[in-house]
Structure formats: C-alpha cells, structure tokens
Length: 459
Image 1 (cartoon, one colour):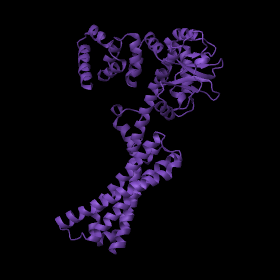
Image 2 (cartoon, rainbow, N blue to C red):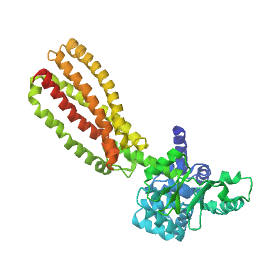
Image 3 (cartoon, rainbow, N blue to C red):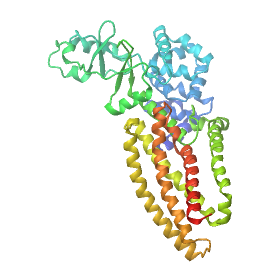
Image 4 (cartoon, rainbow, N blue to C red):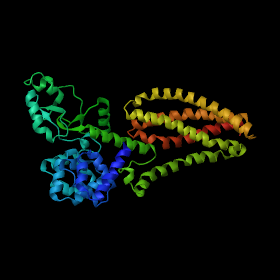
C-alpha cells in the first residue's frame, strides 16, 4: 500500500511540475484529505499555495487540518483575507484551537481577526483550560436535544443543525441550563416505533462523562475501554460544555505513547516530529538525561575503585563485569517496561505492589537459575577447558554464577518497584525505565559481585 502511494505521489508531483493542473485537480478531489496533506511534504515552498488552490473549498479545509504547522503557516501568510475566512469557516472549533496553539503570535492575530465571533469565543474558551486536559482537546460543536422533544422533532433538529457539527451519531440530552441528563443515538431515533415518543423515554441515563479538568490520558483510556465515538465533557456543575471525539483521543494516545517511549529511551519529550527536529532540538532533548546518567554512573566507578585490590588479586573477575551488568540491566528493563505498560493501561495500582513483587520474585528465581546454570557450563567449557585460562577456577565460576542469579532477582525487584513508586509520588513511571534502572542495577550487581568474591575467594 505504501509503495503504491509513493508511486502515485511521484506522478502527482510530476503533473504539478508539468503544469497539468486540470488533470491534477481531477485526481486530487478523489483522494482522502490526509493523503493529500502528505503530498505537501514533498513540495517546494512556492508550490504549496499553488497545489492548495487546486482543491475544492471543503476538501481544502479538511486537508489544511492534516498539514504540518510549517505548511499551514506558509499558507496563512499567503492567503488573502477572503481565502483565510473561507478556510476558517470550514474548520471545526477544536481544529481551529489547535491551529491557534501552533502558530506564532502574528499569525494567531490574523486568524482571530477573520474568525466569526462565535468561533472566536469558542476558541478562547478552549484555550483557557489547562494544557493536556479534556477541556483543551474538546470541541463545542455537538447536537443537543431536550428531554420533552419527540423523536420526530429530534430528527428534524439534527437535520437543521447537524451540518455544522463534528459528529451527529451521538446526541446529548440537556436541560435549559445545559445540565446533561442523557444521551441518544441516531440509530435509537431512526428505529423508534413511535415518532411522537418523547426523547426522555428512549434516552440512556446511565452516563459516562469527563470534566473539563480530567487529564487527556485518562480520556484516551476511557475511549479504549468503552469504545466510544465521542465522550461528553461537563463542567463542575454537570453542565455540558463540549465533547471529545475519537480522532482527538487517537491523537492523544499517539502523543502519550511517543512521550513515554522518548522518556524510556533517556530523552526529554519532543514537541516536534523527528523529521522536523533540528540537531539543536535533538541536542537539547538528549543532553540533560545523558548528563544525569553520566553523573549517576560515577557510583559504579567508585565501587570498582574501592575493590581495586580484589581485582588485582584475581584479574579474571574483571572479564565478567560487563556480562553481569548487562544481564542485570536487561532484567530490570524487562520488569520495568512490563509494569509501566500495565500502569498506562490502568491495570495496576500502587496497592498491587506486594502482588507484583511476589510474581517478579518467582519469575526472577526461574530466570536466574537458568542463566546461572548456562553461565556455569559456558565458563567451565569455554574459558577453562577450551581456552585453558588458568585464572578460571571452580570457585571463580561459582562466584560469577551466584552473582548472576542474585543480580537478576535484584534487578527485577527494582524494575517492578520503581515505576509503581514513581506513580504513587506523582511522577511519570516512564522516568524509571531502562537508563535509570540500569544505572541502579549496575551499582548493586557490582556490590554483590565483590562481596561474593571476598567471601569465597578470600580476597
């Protein structure tokens, strides 16, 4: 599919180069706005306005929403006042609010100047809510009905108002003061046996909703759990103020997943996609974690330095340090990633710490025993018999293998505990992922290693 689209993209760009505008327009009108928006990434700046003006008004607005902020800004600056107003009139309120958040001040001023008063008021309302809250991602365009309306009156109202709403499948039943009392779907209305039946007789009153202050990640989880197409948003007095639609929830899921992956990889979350990030942007996101981990890794160096005499007396111990540290780090990462994923899906709470620890201890014992046995056989067969290393003795082999088993147990306990503690303290559990846990486990594994060495090798 991707290869086919790439071929089509090249053909369309060639048509633009050859100035075959009529043919290009005929093809563009058959394409999905998201695919059309993807074409603009391969255009030169002077070509972007030219191709955009080939699109019909409604498709142009839908394509504009899907475009990258840089291309949007370029177009806005090149729009006439009439063109800008036409695009804004076709945008949904939440998309217009996102646009305002992305643009520089001079562009925002022009957007608000040409937006109609109702949209301008709705945009300002959305922008007042805290960032990453349900209020900041909702739209105020929804169909509201009254409990006393008949089915026929409700259908007529949907026909008259629905064209300007983002979704009409789910309608919200409110009182005059906008208090949310129920929901009803278009399917319920169309299949109702009596057109004169009041809405309050067929509406669903067991409501699931969020407030304007609900975290957007919690909103996304509710979409995943309940398979909603839209979710009502109310204020502190249960008055309906907007809805969050499925497409916005999907954007939140992608954004939160990206943020977690970046943090787990030892980076600050980035506001820009990788393709649009400059080396300076990447440097700013990566250097804080690298500095922190470099400083924390000095503890490992201090431990090795404090046991220099033991290493000098038994040089063979040095060769196994990387293997022990890597295995410990990998073991801790496995547990932390599993727990962080469960936390993000709301499958675990801090109260489950005891259960998680007990499960990870049993798992780590099984993993540790298997790894220790395999390591013992490998050292004895390869390092001692095959390579004939005289420094490798049965005691050295036992010290390495016992350390390996204990390290795996410690690593998995640390890996499963820290994310739960971080969540309890109000931090992002992803902060306690691979780099941070690896540094802690490295230090602990070395302490165990040298303690066993001193105990069994009498160093």
